[in-house]
Amino acid sequence: MDILEIKNVTKTFHTRSFWGKSKEVHALNGITLSLAKGESLGIVGESGCGKSTLASLIIHLAEPTGGEILLYGKDISHAKEKEVKEIRKKIQIVFQDPYSSLSPRMKIGDIIMEPARVMGEFSEAHRKERAEMLLEMVGLRKNVMDRYPHEFSGGQRQRISIA
Ligand SMILES: Nc1ncnc2c1ncn2[C@@H]1O[C@H](COP(=O)(O)OP(=O)(O)O)[C@@H](O)[C@H]1O
Ligand SMILES: [Mg+2]
Image (tube, rainbow, N blue to C red; front, side, top):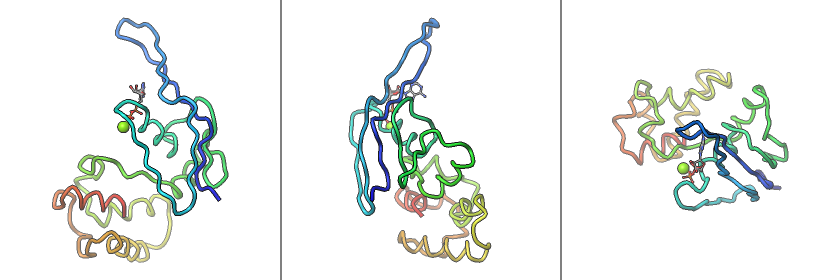
């Protein structure tokens, strides 16, 4: 079964030029793709071709102008606030720039436990245990839990984001 299906998705931005003239930007025009369990998919293209726009629709930071986005068979393209919380448990983004996406004032352990805290998942002890396990899965020692992002390299921060 496909985990993710993108069907004929379009995204048009309505903007205004400096002189106030309205302008349409067709960022995505009829995108169709699917992703099955265990598959990886790379999307490649020149700057401005719509890669980030597509990613933002998939994680529901924005809604498509047309078409459907199915996550585990369910159309999420116009999900309401409550449904978005459920979507966030199933799909997440690892931002390109690990220097701006990790809060400099938060310890690594808190950064990794934050999503489960927000979702109210597990006990605090269980969350800590899971965070340590995730750190080990991405090749970091669990004793980094009490350290801060600035103590890590770009690659290590990217791993923290993945965890
Ligand atoms: N919020 C927005 N408002 C208006 N235009 C946007 C917005 N976001 C992206 N665009 C435009 O959509 C197009 C695709 O941008 P983007 O998805 O960021 O490309 P990529 O990530 O492939 O470099 C560009 O022309 C960009 O200017
Ligand atoms: Mg981009």
